Image (cartoon, rainbow, N blue to C red; front, side):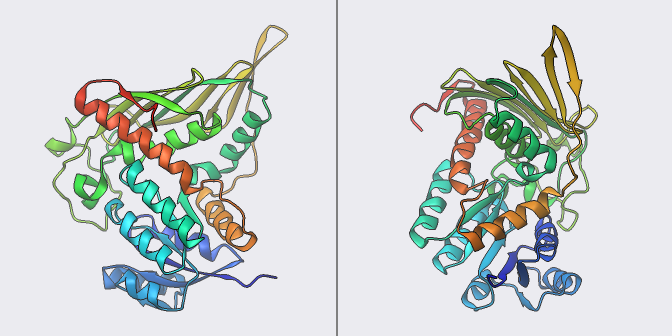
Length: 347
């Protein structure tokens, strides 16, 4: 039996506790360290999860011989420097989404992982839920035929997170880079990761800039000045003729709505709030609702990361794939700024 992977979590607020819970629920891992610039928050997490080592400086954590791998669960603008430092220190890294601000930063991180011969995985938890994995399996088996269109929607009526999320210098953007990255990544993955050739997008900030639509997410952070979008939409075309449309919001005069749909030549499917499949049999449209065993995507993500480290396997959400996802998101933002179609053909 390989020894347990010693894991540390950098960033105890927001999503950090989900990673801590994931490591605790993974028999092959040992949660040994937590780091946060807020000492009280770090100590509270250590007490809650029984973590022996507490740090307020990630550099000191990386210098200490107490972890083999780290989860980076900090504001988006710190993903690049912390990940580069961790890889240089010989640690494997599970970095929260979005991997970086853009494709250029993501490429630097992937290159550093290759140089260090360490695993760099992006925390795209949506890929790891039981329904999501089943839909991917059906798509790979050709049960839906050729997938030619994906449509993703993740709308919050009043769910603007607090603190750094609202500051473009720390976050890199609003709902598009925060939650849109989930549904875009998943649809693109299910559709076989086709090569993107162009993107068009729009963004709006009518509610966030007037103090409307504030939510509870990020309650550990103080309110900040709103300098990002609160709603975005985009359309991406691919080399094989496929396309993905995307609509996301933190705040809008609408009810909360989330789904990811794929359309194929033999059938279609929707993920969330439940998995639904549509096919035609004998000239009749047939709808089925599979019920795979329910699994927590966050826990499965952590278990997969640890398993890859122990077995030397490549992660399902290897960071090299996130380079292309970040290129697509950046192209939507660029299109929104210029009002023009943005080419991705040279990427």
